[in-house]
Image (cartoon, rainbow, N blue to C red; front, side, top):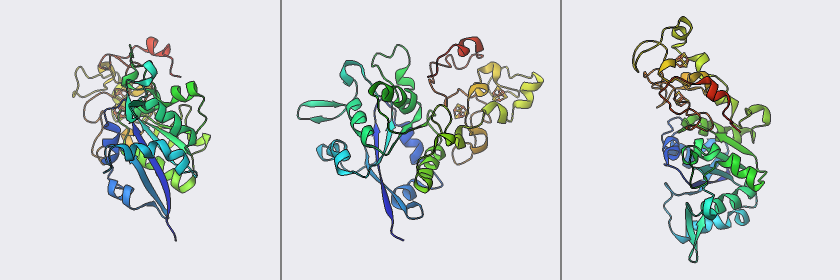
Length: 290
Ligand code: SF4
Ligand code: SF4
């Protein structure tokens, strides 16, 4: 069977590169398998641009970003890692130059997103703005959800939240696209996240839940007991961390004695700060998510 290639363009804006690191840490499949082999039978990812891992540099690789809509008329998947600064014409984050003009990251995202088959808003920053968009947000940073609304971009958007996301959440989503095409609305929650990974409330699947129900609360991190009074955001956070765990299934936040800080929820960190204080449910109830 001939192998068909799916071009992927991965751009990084106001980000720490943690989302790239998390995917590079994927174990099954490994990053070598993802980039060199068929992720699913007959389908291979052709990563055309990724500033951290590609060998190329300079003007020729910036040209890939500028010409992709014309050069790849059958489309590509665009991955947006990091928030999109929009203040001052987007000049707080520029990728490459056009003559002597810095090209704003926002301009790349707008051009590329309009011609993409689908866009993945990766991490809290790429999807909902994350830490770069926290108050007072002097750069006007926003994630794809708000940017697409402002620019009236209609391309299907899948959000893989998390700070960073679990590598399985990204790799599993890519595998789904290759196998079955874009996930339909019934496969996504109302925040645009795949239900397969974000369908469960941490609090309902927590090994410390019996302590919560019995009113036994840890006085400090690492103690036996529920971590709610230590700031745990598990009652407000949807993700499968308790089942999937991290570092190839080695452990996860709550099992390691640390409260869930709600990193898989939109508007992290502003929404949950101060993260190590007992959740003020009244304040959270009034927090606008979308
Ligand atoms: S540790 Fe967190 S998620 Fe687990 S039962 Fe307590 S509040 Fe819920
Ligand atoms: S348990 Fe909470 S803080 Fe930890 S990775 Fe999962 S969503 Fe993020």
